[in-house]
View (cartoon, rainbow, N blue to C red):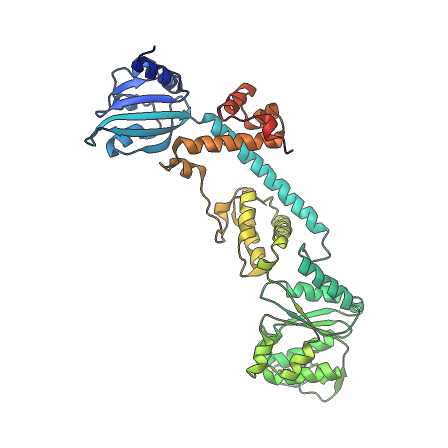
Length: 465
Protein backbone atom coordinates (compact mmCIF):
# COMPACT_ATOMS: atom_id res chain seq x y z
CA UNK A 1 0.00 0.00 0.00
CA UNK A 2 1.29 3.45 -0.95
CA UNK A 3 1.95 5.72 2.08
CA UNK A 4 -0.33 8.76 2.29
CA UNK A 5 2.49 11.24 1.78
CA UNK A 6 3.71 9.46 -1.34
CA UNK A 7 0.17 9.20 -2.65
CA UNK A 8 -0.36 12.94 -2.25
CA UNK A 9 2.93 13.63 -4.02
CA UNK A 10 1.91 11.40 -6.94
CA UNK A 11 -1.40 13.21 -7.23
CA UNK A 12 0.28 16.61 -7.25
CA UNK A 13 2.87 15.51 -9.83
CA UNK A 14 0.18 14.20 -12.15
CA UNK A 15 -1.79 17.44 -12.05
CA UNK A 16 -1.94 19.19 -15.46
CA UNK A 17 -2.04 22.50 -13.60
CA UNK A 18 1.01 24.00 -11.95
CA UNK A 19 1.03 23.58 -8.16
CA UNK A 20 3.02 25.59 -5.61
CA UNK A 21 2.82 25.25 -1.84
CA UNK A 22 4.27 28.17 0.14
CA UNK A 23 4.66 28.59 3.91
CA UNK A 24 3.49 31.66 5.83
CA UNK A 25 6.82 33.39 5.18
CA UNK A 26 6.54 32.97 1.42
CA UNK A 27 9.10 30.13 1.18
CA UNK A 28 8.34 27.50 -1.47
CA UNK A 29 7.79 24.05 0.02
CA UNK A 30 6.64 22.23 -3.11
CA UNK A 31 6.53 22.78 -6.87
CA UNK A 32 5.28 20.13 -9.33
CA UNK A 33 6.53 19.33 -12.83
CA UNK A 34 3.61 21.11 -14.48
CA UNK A 35 4.78 24.32 -12.76
CA UNK A 36 8.30 23.76 -14.05
CA UNK A 37 6.99 23.29 -17.59
CA UNK A 38 4.71 26.34 -17.51
CA UNK A 39 7.33 28.72 -16.15
CA UNK A 40 10.33 27.27 -18.05
CA UNK A 41 12.27 27.43 -14.78
CA UNK A 42 14.17 24.32 -13.53
CA UNK A 43 13.00 22.67 -10.31
CA UNK A 44 16.18 23.96 -8.66
CA UNK A 45 14.90 27.52 -9.15
CA UNK A 46 12.05 26.73 -6.75
CA UNK A 47 13.70 24.48 -4.16
CA UNK A 48 14.25 26.38 -0.93
CA UNK A 49 13.54 29.73 -2.59
CA UNK A 50 10.95 32.33 -1.62
CA UNK A 51 8.28 33.84 -3.86
CA UNK A 52 10.17 37.11 -3.58
CA UNK A 53 13.19 35.35 -5.14
CA UNK A 54 11.04 34.12 -8.04
CA UNK A 55 9.52 37.55 -8.57
CA UNK A 56 12.97 39.11 -8.46
CA UNK A 57 14.01 37.00 -11.45
CA UNK A 58 11.39 38.81 -13.56
CA UNK A 59 9.24 35.73 -14.11
CA UNK A 60 5.97 37.68 -14.13
CA UNK A 61 4.89 40.66 -16.23
CA UNK A 62 2.56 41.87 -13.45
CA UNK A 63 2.53 41.60 -9.60
CA UNK A 64 2.46 38.07 -8.22
CA UNK A 65 -1.03 36.76 -7.40
CA UNK A 66 0.41 34.46 -4.73
CA UNK A 67 2.28 37.25 -2.91
CA UNK A 68 -0.82 39.42 -2.98
CA UNK A 69 -2.91 36.59 -1.49
CA UNK A 70 -0.21 35.97 1.12
CA UNK A 71 -0.24 39.62 2.11
CA UNK A 72 -4.04 40.01 2.17
CA UNK A 73 -4.68 36.48 3.54
CA UNK A 74 -7.55 35.81 1.15
CA UNK A 75 -8.21 33.78 -2.00
CA UNK A 76 -7.31 35.70 -5.16
CA UNK A 77 -7.76 34.67 -8.81
CA UNK A 78 -6.15 36.70 -11.58
CA UNK A 79 -4.35 36.50 -14.91
CA UNK A 80 -0.58 36.47 -15.25
CA UNK A 81 1.87 36.08 -18.10
CA UNK A 82 5.30 34.51 -17.71
CA UNK A 83 8.39 35.92 -19.35
CA UNK A 84 8.27 32.99 -21.82
CA UNK A 85 4.95 34.33 -23.15
CA UNK A 86 2.69 31.71 -21.56
CA UNK A 87 -0.64 33.16 -20.35
CA UNK A 88 -1.95 31.62 -17.14
CA UNK A 89 -4.82 31.92 -14.68
CA UNK A 90 -3.59 31.75 -11.07
CA UNK A 91 -5.70 31.00 -8.00
CA UNK A 92 -3.93 31.45 -4.65
CA UNK A 93 -5.75 29.86 -1.70
CA UNK A 94 -4.68 30.54 1.94
CA UNK A 95 -4.88 27.66 4.47
CA UNK A 96 -5.33 28.37 8.18
CA UNK A 97 -4.91 26.30 11.35
CA UNK A 98 -7.49 25.90 14.12
CA UNK A 99 -6.38 29.26 15.58
CA UNK A 100 -7.03 30.96 12.23
CA UNK A 101 -3.33 31.51 11.72
CA UNK A 102 -2.01 31.30 8.14
CA UNK A 103 0.17 28.21 7.75
CA UNK A 104 0.27 27.50 4.01
CA UNK A 105 -0.61 29.06 0.67
CA UNK A 106 -1.71 26.82 -2.21
CA UNK A 107 -1.17 28.29 -5.69
CA UNK A 108 -2.88 26.64 -8.70
CA UNK A 109 -1.70 27.81 -12.14
CA UNK A 110 -3.74 26.97 -15.24
CA UNK A 111 -2.43 27.41 -18.80
CA UNK A 112 -4.93 29.53 -20.78
CA UNK A 113 -2.83 30.10 -23.90
CA UNK A 114 -5.10 27.83 -25.97
CA UNK A 115 -8.21 29.55 -24.62
CA UNK A 116 -6.85 32.96 -25.60
CA UNK A 117 -6.06 31.60 -29.08
CA UNK A 118 -9.61 30.23 -29.29
CA UNK A 119 -11.01 33.55 -28.08
CA UNK A 120 -9.13 35.43 -30.81
CA UNK A 121 -10.45 32.99 -33.41
CA UNK A 122 -13.99 33.46 -32.13
CA UNK A 123 -13.57 37.25 -32.26
CA UNK A 124 -12.44 36.96 -35.89
CA UNK A 125 -15.47 34.79 -36.64
CA UNK A 126 -17.71 37.33 -34.87
CA UNK A 127 -16.32 40.14 -37.03
CA UNK A 128 -16.84 38.13 -40.19
CA UNK A 129 -20.33 37.20 -39.01
CA UNK A 130 -21.12 40.86 -38.37
CA UNK A 131 -20.05 41.73 -41.91
CA UNK A 132 -22.20 39.00 -43.46
CA UNK A 133 -25.11 39.91 -41.19
CA UNK A 134 -24.98 43.53 -42.35
CA UNK A 135 -24.79 42.44 -46.00
CA UNK A 136 -27.82 40.16 -45.47
CA UNK A 137 -29.83 43.01 -43.98
CA UNK A 138 -28.86 45.20 -46.92
CA UNK A 139 -30.01 42.57 -49.41
CA UNK A 140 -33.29 42.14 -47.57
CA UNK A 141 -34.11 45.83 -47.49
CA UNK A 142 -33.57 46.10 -51.27
CA UNK A 143 -36.76 44.07 -51.65
CA UNK A 144 -38.79 46.62 -49.66
CA UNK A 145 -41.29 48.74 -51.56
CA UNK A 146 -39.78 52.14 -52.30
CA UNK A 147 -38.82 53.90 -49.04
CA UNK A 148 -40.84 51.62 -46.73
CA UNK A 149 -38.74 49.01 -44.99
CA UNK A 150 -40.74 46.59 -42.88
CA UNK A 151 -41.22 42.98 -41.91
CA UNK A 152 -43.93 43.82 -39.38
CA UNK A 153 -47.42 42.41 -39.91
CA UNK A 154 -49.17 45.59 -38.70
CA UNK A 155 -47.05 47.78 -40.97
CA UNK A 156 -47.72 45.51 -43.94
CA UNK A 157 -51.45 45.89 -43.29
CA UNK A 158 -51.01 49.68 -43.26
CA UNK A 159 -49.14 49.57 -46.58
CA UNK A 160 -51.88 47.41 -48.10
CA UNK A 161 -54.48 49.94 -46.92
CA UNK A 162 -52.46 52.80 -48.42
CA UNK A 163 -52.27 51.02 -51.77
CA UNK A 164 -55.98 50.27 -51.60
CA UNK A 165 -56.96 53.91 -51.06
CA UNK A 166 -54.23 55.26 -53.34
CA UNK A 167 -56.51 55.85 -56.32
CA UNK A 168 -59.05 57.81 -54.25
CA UNK A 169 -58.88 61.42 -53.07
CA UNK A 170 -59.99 60.72 -49.51
CA UNK A 171 -58.30 62.71 -46.76
CA UNK A 172 -55.90 60.61 -44.68
CA UNK A 173 -54.92 61.34 -41.06
CA UNK A 174 -51.64 59.70 -39.99
CA UNK A 175 -51.34 59.26 -36.21
CA UNK A 176 -48.29 58.18 -34.25
CA UNK A 177 -45.36 59.23 -32.10
CA UNK A 178 -42.69 61.56 -33.40
CA UNK A 179 -40.15 59.76 -35.59
CA UNK A 180 -42.27 56.73 -36.59
CA UNK A 181 -42.13 57.57 -40.31
CA UNK A 182 -45.35 59.48 -40.98
CA UNK A 183 -43.72 61.51 -43.74
CA UNK A 184 -42.54 58.32 -45.50
CA UNK A 185 -46.07 56.93 -45.47
CA UNK A 186 -47.48 60.25 -46.68
CA UNK A 187 -45.16 60.16 -49.68
CA UNK A 188 -46.15 56.53 -50.31
CA UNK A 189 -49.80 57.66 -50.46
CA UNK A 190 -48.85 60.14 -53.17
CA UNK A 191 -46.65 57.64 -55.08
CA UNK A 192 -49.47 55.06 -55.24
CA UNK A 193 -52.07 57.57 -56.40
CA UNK A 194 -53.03 58.81 -59.86
CA UNK A 195 -51.59 62.19 -58.84
CA UNK A 196 -47.94 61.07 -58.88
CA UNK A 197 -47.68 61.99 -62.59
CA UNK A 198 -49.96 65.03 -62.63
CA UNK A 199 -48.82 66.97 -59.57
CA UNK A 200 -46.17 67.39 -56.90
CA UNK A 201 -45.90 66.13 -53.35
CA UNK A 202 -45.73 69.23 -51.16
CA UNK A 203 -44.86 68.88 -47.47
CA UNK A 204 -45.32 71.59 -44.86
CA UNK A 205 -44.63 71.34 -41.13
CA UNK A 206 -47.34 73.38 -39.43
CA UNK A 207 -45.26 73.63 -36.27
CA UNK A 208 -42.12 74.92 -37.98
CA UNK A 209 -43.56 78.04 -39.69
CA UNK A 210 -44.07 81.20 -37.58
CA UNK A 211 -47.78 81.65 -36.86
CA UNK A 212 -47.94 85.12 -38.43
CA UNK A 213 -46.59 83.69 -41.71
CA UNK A 214 -48.69 80.53 -41.86
CA UNK A 215 -51.62 82.04 -43.77
CA UNK A 216 -49.45 83.58 -46.48
CA UNK A 217 -47.44 80.35 -46.77
CA UNK A 218 -50.60 78.28 -47.12
CA UNK A 219 -52.58 80.52 -49.45
CA UNK A 220 -50.02 82.92 -50.94
CA UNK A 221 -50.41 86.70 -51.24
CA UNK A 222 -51.15 89.30 -53.87
CA UNK A 223 -49.17 92.41 -54.83
CA UNK A 224 -48.81 94.85 -51.93
CA UNK A 225 -50.45 92.55 -49.40
CA UNK A 226 -47.97 93.65 -46.70
CA UNK A 227 -44.66 95.43 -46.24
CA UNK A 228 -41.82 93.40 -47.69
CA UNK A 229 -44.06 91.34 -49.98
CA UNK A 230 -42.86 90.64 -53.51
CA UNK A 231 -44.32 93.02 -56.10
CA UNK A 232 -45.54 90.15 -58.25
CA UNK A 233 -47.09 88.31 -55.29
CA UNK A 234 -46.48 84.69 -54.37
CA UNK A 235 -48.45 81.44 -54.79
CA UNK A 236 -49.15 79.45 -51.63
CA UNK A 237 -48.63 75.78 -50.89
CA UNK A 238 -52.19 74.91 -51.91
CA UNK A 239 -51.56 76.31 -55.38
CA UNK A 240 -48.24 74.50 -55.66
CA UNK A 241 -49.97 71.24 -54.72
CA UNK A 242 -52.68 71.60 -57.41
CA UNK A 243 -53.25 68.21 -59.08
CA UNK A 244 -50.87 66.72 -56.49
CA UNK A 245 -50.76 66.00 -52.76
CA UNK A 246 -50.41 68.45 -49.88
CA UNK A 247 -49.00 66.88 -46.72
CA UNK A 248 -49.77 68.92 -43.59
CA UNK A 249 -47.46 67.54 -40.92
CA UNK A 250 -48.03 68.41 -37.24
CA UNK A 251 -51.58 69.55 -38.01
CA UNK A 252 -52.24 69.79 -34.27
CA UNK A 253 -49.99 72.89 -34.14
CA UNK A 254 -52.25 74.87 -36.50
CA UNK A 255 -53.70 78.02 -34.82
CA UNK A 256 -57.50 78.14 -34.38
CA UNK A 257 -58.02 81.13 -36.72
CA UNK A 258 -56.28 79.28 -39.54
CA UNK A 259 -58.19 76.08 -38.80
CA UNK A 260 -61.41 77.81 -39.88
CA UNK A 261 -59.96 78.88 -43.21
CA UNK A 262 -58.46 75.43 -43.79
CA UNK A 263 -61.89 73.88 -43.20
CA UNK A 264 -63.41 76.10 -45.89
CA UNK A 265 -60.68 75.16 -48.36
CA UNK A 266 -61.21 71.45 -47.68
CA UNK A 267 -64.95 71.83 -48.26
CA UNK A 268 -64.87 74.07 -51.35
CA UNK A 269 -61.36 73.51 -52.77
CA UNK A 270 -61.09 77.27 -53.31
CA UNK A 271 -59.62 80.26 -51.46
CA UNK A 272 -58.28 83.77 -51.90
CA UNK A 273 -54.71 84.88 -51.47
CA UNK A 274 -53.77 87.19 -48.59
CA UNK A 275 -54.59 90.73 -49.75
CA UNK A 276 -56.43 89.40 -52.80
CA UNK A 277 -60.07 89.13 -53.91
CA UNK A 278 -59.89 86.56 -56.71
CA UNK A 279 -61.11 83.06 -55.92
CA UNK A 280 -58.50 80.42 -56.75
CA UNK A 281 -59.69 76.89 -57.47
CA UNK A 282 -57.38 73.99 -56.63
CA UNK A 283 -57.53 70.22 -56.77
CA UNK A 284 -55.16 68.88 -54.14
CA UNK A 285 -55.36 65.74 -52.08
CA UNK A 286 -54.84 66.39 -48.38
CA UNK A 287 -52.82 64.12 -46.11
CA UNK A 288 -52.33 65.24 -42.49
CA UNK A 289 -50.29 63.90 -39.59
CA UNK A 290 -49.85 64.54 -35.89
CA UNK A 291 -48.34 63.03 -32.77
CA UNK A 292 -50.93 64.80 -30.59
CA UNK A 293 -54.28 63.54 -29.32
CA UNK A 294 -56.68 65.60 -31.47
CA UNK A 295 -59.78 64.27 -29.68
CA UNK A 296 -58.51 65.58 -26.34
CA UNK A 297 -57.62 68.89 -28.01
CA UNK A 298 -61.19 69.14 -29.30
CA UNK A 299 -62.52 68.62 -25.75
CA UNK A 300 -60.19 71.34 -24.45
CA UNK A 301 -61.22 73.74 -27.23
CA UNK A 302 -57.75 73.73 -28.81
CA UNK A 303 -58.85 72.13 -32.09
CA UNK A 304 -62.04 72.68 -34.06
CA UNK A 305 -64.42 69.74 -33.82
CA UNK A 306 -65.75 70.22 -37.37
CA UNK A 307 -62.21 70.28 -38.77
CA UNK A 308 -61.29 67.18 -36.79
CA UNK A 309 -64.14 65.18 -38.30
CA UNK A 310 -63.28 66.54 -41.73
CA UNK A 311 -59.70 65.31 -41.38
CA UNK A 312 -60.54 62.02 -39.67
CA UNK A 313 -61.91 60.31 -42.81
CA UNK A 314 -59.24 57.58 -42.98
CA UNK A 315 -57.21 57.54 -39.75
CA UNK A 316 -54.08 55.38 -39.79
CA UNK A 317 -52.34 54.62 -36.49
CA UNK A 318 -48.62 53.93 -36.98
CA UNK A 319 -47.10 51.75 -34.22
CA UNK A 320 -43.89 52.94 -32.50
CA UNK A 321 -40.65 51.13 -33.23
CA UNK A 322 -40.63 49.37 -29.85
CA UNK A 323 -43.84 47.57 -30.91
CA UNK A 324 -42.45 46.49 -34.28
CA UNK A 325 -39.10 45.04 -33.26
CA UNK A 326 -38.95 42.80 -36.32
CA UNK A 327 -38.27 45.99 -38.32
CA UNK A 328 -35.21 46.97 -36.26
CA UNK A 329 -32.68 44.63 -38.00
CA UNK A 330 -33.91 45.74 -41.44
CA UNK A 331 -33.68 49.41 -40.53
CA UNK A 332 -30.20 48.94 -39.07
CA UNK A 333 -29.07 47.35 -42.34
CA UNK A 334 -30.69 50.11 -44.38
CA UNK A 335 -29.11 52.95 -42.40
CA UNK A 336 -25.70 51.26 -42.28
CA UNK A 337 -25.69 50.92 -46.05
CA UNK A 338 -26.95 54.46 -46.55
CA UNK A 339 -24.40 56.15 -44.28
CA UNK A 340 -21.54 53.87 -45.37
CA UNK A 341 -22.19 54.98 -48.95
CA UNK A 342 -22.67 58.64 -48.00
CA UNK A 343 -19.45 58.88 -45.97
CA UNK A 344 -17.40 56.23 -47.85
CA UNK A 345 -17.13 53.93 -44.83
CA UNK A 346 -17.36 50.17 -44.29
CA UNK A 347 -18.89 49.86 -40.82
CA UNK A 348 -20.82 46.90 -39.48
CA UNK A 349 -22.32 45.88 -36.14
CA UNK A 350 -21.21 42.88 -34.09
CA UNK A 351 -23.96 40.42 -33.21
CA UNK A 352 -23.81 41.51 -29.57
CA UNK A 353 -24.19 45.20 -30.53
CA UNK A 354 -27.13 44.35 -32.81
CA UNK A 355 -28.80 42.49 -29.94
CA UNK A 356 -28.53 45.55 -27.70
CA UNK A 357 -30.05 47.81 -30.35
CA UNK A 358 -32.83 45.27 -30.82
CA UNK A 359 -33.66 45.31 -27.09
CA UNK A 360 -33.48 49.12 -26.74
CA UNK A 361 -36.88 50.82 -26.25
CA UNK A 362 -36.31 53.58 -28.90
CA UNK A 363 -38.23 56.56 -27.47
CA UNK A 364 -37.24 58.55 -30.56
CA UNK A 365 -38.34 55.77 -32.92
CA UNK A 366 -36.87 55.48 -36.44
CA UNK A 367 -35.45 59.00 -36.35
CA UNK A 368 -33.42 58.13 -33.24
CA UNK A 369 -32.19 54.88 -34.84
CA UNK A 370 -31.10 56.74 -37.96
CA UNK A 371 -29.25 59.37 -35.93
CA UNK A 372 -27.45 56.75 -33.81
CA UNK A 373 -26.32 54.71 -36.82
CA UNK A 374 -25.04 57.87 -38.53
CA UNK A 375 -23.13 58.84 -35.39
CA UNK A 376 -21.58 55.37 -35.09
CA UNK A 377 -20.53 55.31 -38.75
CA UNK A 378 -18.83 58.70 -38.37
CA UNK A 379 -17.22 58.37 -34.93
CA UNK A 380 -16.19 54.73 -34.37
CA UNK A 381 -12.66 53.98 -35.59
CA UNK A 382 -12.93 50.20 -36.02
CA UNK A 383 -14.97 48.72 -38.86
CA UNK A 384 -16.90 46.46 -36.46
CA UNK A 385 -18.98 48.35 -33.88
CA UNK A 386 -18.98 46.65 -30.46
CA UNK A 387 -21.50 46.92 -27.55
CA UNK A 388 -19.34 49.24 -25.43
CA UNK A 389 -19.34 51.79 -28.26
CA UNK A 390 -23.13 52.16 -28.41
CA UNK A 391 -24.59 55.41 -27.07
CA UNK A 392 -27.85 53.76 -25.92
CA UNK A 393 -28.79 52.32 -22.54
CA UNK A 394 -28.06 48.60 -22.33
CA UNK A 395 -30.93 46.28 -21.52
CA UNK A 396 -28.52 43.45 -20.69
CA UNK A 397 -25.33 43.78 -18.64
CA UNK A 398 -22.17 43.29 -20.66
CA UNK A 399 -20.08 41.00 -18.42
CA UNK A 400 -16.63 40.38 -19.80
CA UNK A 401 -14.94 36.99 -19.56
CA UNK A 402 -12.02 38.50 -17.68
CA UNK A 403 -14.33 40.05 -15.07
CA UNK A 404 -16.02 36.71 -14.50
CA UNK A 405 -12.75 34.85 -14.19
CA UNK A 406 -11.40 37.39 -11.71
CA UNK A 407 -14.36 36.79 -9.41
CA UNK A 408 -13.07 34.68 -6.56
CA UNK A 409 -16.35 32.81 -6.32
CA UNK A 410 -15.99 31.48 -9.85
CA UNK A 411 -12.39 30.26 -9.95
CA UNK A 412 -11.29 27.35 -12.11
CA UNK A 413 -14.79 25.88 -12.40
CA UNK A 414 -15.94 28.88 -14.42
CA UNK A 415 -12.90 28.64 -16.67
CA UNK A 416 -13.65 24.98 -17.36
CA UNK A 417 -17.27 25.83 -18.12
CA UNK A 418 -16.25 28.54 -20.59
CA UNK A 419 -13.74 26.24 -22.29
CA UNK A 420 -16.24 23.38 -22.49
CA UNK A 421 -19.01 25.52 -23.96
CA UNK A 422 -16.65 27.10 -26.48
CA UNK A 423 -15.39 23.73 -27.73
CA UNK A 424 -18.92 22.33 -27.86
CA UNK A 425 -20.30 25.24 -29.88
CA UNK A 426 -17.45 25.17 -32.44
CA UNK A 427 -17.72 21.38 -32.95
CA UNK A 428 -21.49 21.65 -33.23
CA UNK A 429 -21.12 24.25 -35.95
CA UNK A 430 -18.23 22.64 -37.87
CA UNK A 431 -19.42 19.04 -37.57
CA UNK A 432 -15.99 17.38 -37.22
CA UNK A 433 -13.07 17.53 -34.78
CA UNK A 434 -10.54 18.36 -37.50
CA UNK A 435 -12.54 21.30 -38.81
CA UNK A 436 -13.18 22.55 -35.27
CA UNK A 437 -9.49 22.27 -34.37
CA UNK A 438 -8.58 24.31 -37.47
CA UNK A 439 -11.04 27.06 -36.56
CA UNK A 440 -9.80 27.13 -32.95
CA UNK A 441 -6.16 27.19 -34.05
CA UNK A 442 -5.11 24.09 -32.08
CA UNK A 443 -3.93 20.64 -33.10
CA UNK A 444 -6.29 17.73 -33.69
CA UNK A 445 -4.80 15.81 -30.73
CA UNK A 446 -5.00 18.81 -28.40
CA UNK A 447 -8.69 19.21 -29.11
CA UNK A 448 -9.30 15.48 -28.49
CA UNK A 449 -7.50 15.78 -25.15
CA UNK A 450 -9.66 18.78 -24.21
CA UNK A 451 -12.80 16.89 -25.22
CA UNK A 452 -11.84 13.95 -22.99
CA UNK A 453 -11.24 16.34 -20.14
CA UNK A 454 -14.78 17.73 -20.47
CA UNK A 455 -16.36 14.36 -21.39
CA UNK A 456 -17.47 15.66 -24.81
CA UNK A 457 -18.36 13.30 -27.67
CA UNK A 458 -18.85 14.36 -31.30
CA UNK A 459 -21.77 11.96 -31.77
CA UNK A 460 -23.69 13.53 -28.90
CA UNK A 461 -22.83 17.10 -29.84
CA UNK A 462 -23.92 16.71 -33.48
CA UNK A 463 -26.87 14.36 -33.00
CA UNK A 464 -29.38 17.18 -33.53
CA UNK A 465 -27.71 18.48 -36.65
